[in-house]
Length: 365
Ligand code: SF4
Image (tube, rainbow, N blue to C red):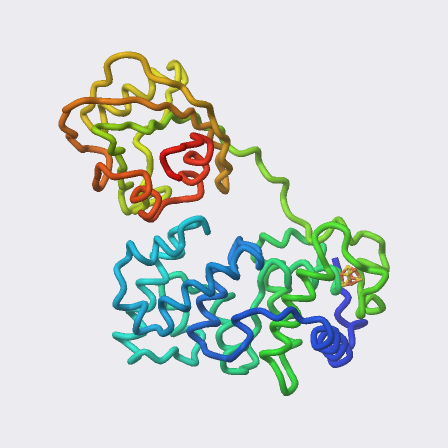
């Protein structure tokens, strides 16, 4: 498939997108300056997460860790605490490791070099490009999902954009646009344009400032682009968890550092096997991972459904009580008996927050 590059006037396209941006850009806290540390934090938070969700997390994070030095000396648990609810927790752990590396290997100064930036944990080509362009005004492209969508439509890239060949084309179109005097502004303009105008569904083509250059608009296949393979249905897993009390304290368990939701605090429980009922699966998991044998009946309080990237979890929730059994921990990194308020102050995932919400606990207020 031949792309539309010849028909697109690079400088005019740039000007139109920039002019649209200057008239329409949103006031976002990370746009107040050009501090590479702040740009980096915002870009990591914005991965897979909407701008409106990120703003309060970003403000709180920057208030607590205003510099790369303050982040590098923090406890990982505190970083995870501030990340609680944002999801993709490996990002927070990588952020902390990267801050240490910037301090130890670069004296706290972010390198102005794509390859060196990409040596930092959690920094890929996109984030490196965004830091270089936005913070240092260097002509380096940053291609995220919004940019890929807009450019595949404008230039008529009709190959699968998850494949290397098409990715390279999009990267090269993006790089060809990074000329002129304000690469940082243009980088943000293109991302914002993709997010606000060239949206995945119902793009605003009739009012679009660049529709006269747009191949997909001319050919009428805007909503078919970018071309991606069909998503496979998420794998369904069933789990069970319990709010387990002993003398008015509740058992919190810390997940192992590696693996799903690693390092976060959670309700005890585990996966339910295909041949088990949820309560039986819960009893087995508690015995296997904590050495606990629950007597009597358990109160099933409901169930929640939670979507991970490739998995859908159906989680059955229970309440129960034990007397004086000792916890013999095997499947978790740590455990604590805490009040509900303390439990919720520990770093936890949005799944755990959802479970607490569903348990509808009067004890919290
Ligand atoms: S015309 Fe439509 S598809 Fe083309 S760039 Fe504008 S919004 Fe996107």
